[in-house]
Image (cartoon, helix red, strand yellow):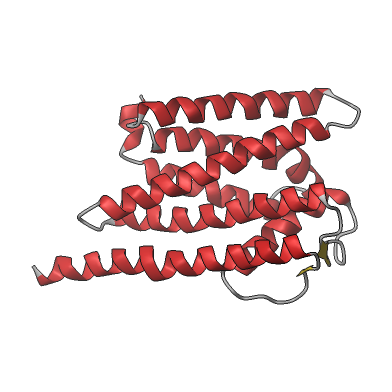
Length: 221
């Protein structure tokens, strides 16, 4: 089954990422943030297992991360009291996942000789993964040191909007748009903003440029 899906690994991973980014436009915000978003991240992790299924050791690592996130997600749903321990556990698992999957996507895209639709989707997925990695960096900072970012609750007052706003901030920073509605006000948060911006620029300048070069060379041969 996994071998059959491997051919469509980039498509599956890409569309699972799109649901994370834009699912809140369809579903009620509170339901999406508390129930659906964590579940979609788990699905994205499962899609990552298909992506690296040819590498057995890394596949087992992803499977362990999937088990950890499922345990943390299930425990969060069952517990009525403070579940910060489970939140940190889940966040750590996703953080490790997006580091590993971003490196794997870059490796696969870099090594492919012929550029086609799958490679383009893989290239886009790698960039989105960088934004999600930046999101977990910012989320870990805000959870550990509250009020590291100014402007998170200017529009939405509920704490359930924290992840939605930080996700937005991560991608705005990655894209170097910088509207200024959310500001990193601590030294650690500012360093994170610099790191996210650099990751985005390095990806475009090196990885995307290399793929474009391969695509151009296909027509010269």
